[in-house]
Length: 199
Image 1: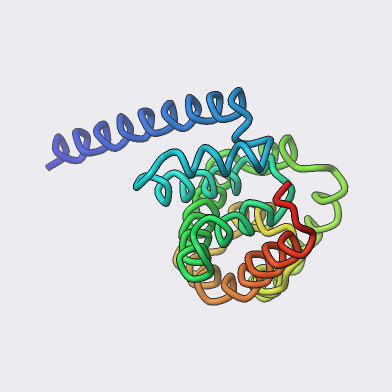
Image 2 (image 1 turned 90 degrees about the horizontal axis):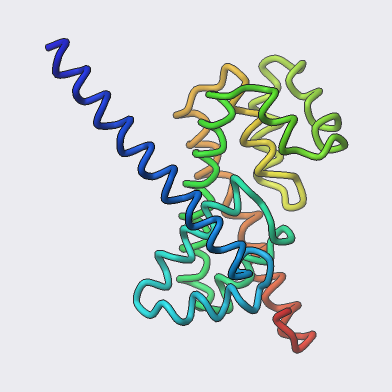
């Protein structure tokens, strides 16, 4: 029994390492190709992937949560522009939920020093005080996820260094995320259409 657990643990670690290497390689390629720094190039890239487009877009959204490099909400707007309001919303939702879970788990693994290194000081100091609120943190976190404008990605990492259980974290995301995501997705795509530009 112990040998089986060790073997399964090694297999999981192997796939985790392979997944991490693959993600890093894709990030390097995406950055060099301008996918993560130019909305136009991201659009052309996704359109050129054919039936793989939705999967590639979801992957981009996952990466965007952990390593945000485009202005907030722009990639959500492109989900609607590229795939329509229904599928665009679904792909945005799936990608952001998965990315948020990764952000939570990464923060839980590497702790506060990791968050401080990748987060602007003003954002960290503004919201890190929530950690002192005790049981109120869960409520504040849910409100931050529900309302547009809060730094969701950072809040997910902040939740990772609290005592919040993963199941509760996922439940809050599933229930509270759609409202803010709808505003970002539909609002920005509509505004971009009015301006006659997609950046």
